[in-house]
Length: 221
Image (cartoon, rainbow, N blue to C red; front, side, top):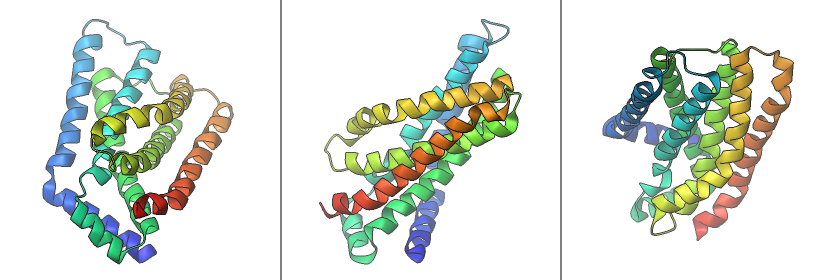
């Protein structure tokens, strides 16, 4: 299982390095969105309010994750999927996709945070808690959206179905992430955020476990 996952992750990274336009497109999306926010808010208001700063950051990250992870299974053609079916287990495929998407989202999220803080300022007082929230958010987005992408890939209009299925799942997680990041911005005692941190960690573990158990049934269909 470990060899299967490692080989599949290496394959995805190799394809990303060869095709570079996908990652570069996400960087362009992040940069242009942050710049539009700068033109819309920072130039009109000298000091951007903290709730607005926090909400804009997570909205940008949410749409970035949907666009980045939507291609997980949608880009795989039928012949390649049949080839995977004959070589590796479905558990290895879903775990490899989750690992790859998690790394991709971590890189995009950190780049987004750095660029966002430079352009719109950085009101965060507890950087460690905020970075931990970003890591949990990237992990949560990648695990949830990877499974949704595999479901949407079975439909004809997969991109639309991906957006429709993802938002009801992501919104509760997004609200919790915004609360955690607000605590980090305000510099509150970390004990206040323990419940949310444990809840997010539990959600991520549950989603990975459910994906591991249910994906083989979806794969055989």
